[in-house]
Image 1 (tube, rainbow, N blue to C red):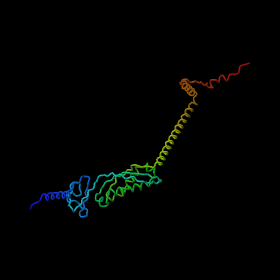
Image 2: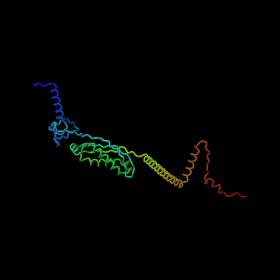
Image 3: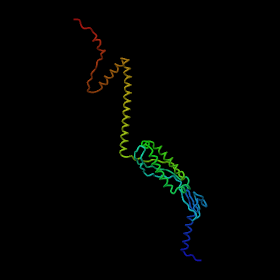
Image 4: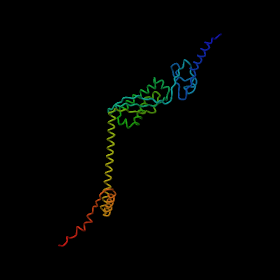
Length: 258
């Protein structure tokens, strides 16, 4: 029987296609979900991977599922906080497939479904928070988002490992209000620190006055020190006050006899 070159080439192509459908090589980070006539099955050789997985062509259908962690951006969401402030918030969610069969069977597109779940949960959780909590308690909010989304995606065989709120965009008027509040807080702290310094200084002066009042020599030393400090300045006129104690003997002398 004679075979034409065209028939030979066609047979080679068919064999290559059948081999391609039969033998599948999965890397370490992938697993296979195999459907045999519509039912979940395992490959003839190699099970669900990784490595070489052999299936029956045209009867088995193989779907690859990656087990690597996916970093997905959550688009910016317009959120009204509990204190009626409109903000725009975006986030990033980290998740991975832990059960390939459930990820394929329980949900049509686990990537799209996880993204939608993250968006709705972000609006729901942040809508119950005060603006100050949203700005100051970022770690707690991230933990709440991770816990809630992980509970919702667990039936799909998805494990959410982390959720991070990236940016919180405030309206211009709210940014100015926060700036004024921060400035007022800094002024308040400056006034408190200044008042505390004045109070401590007054206490030290009171203690010094008490020491000087108990020792007249200390008063004289302080008087001489003040004269030295005054005389240190150039082009200055120095006035030497004379203590009353020095003039007391002259004031107490009797008037001369006439």
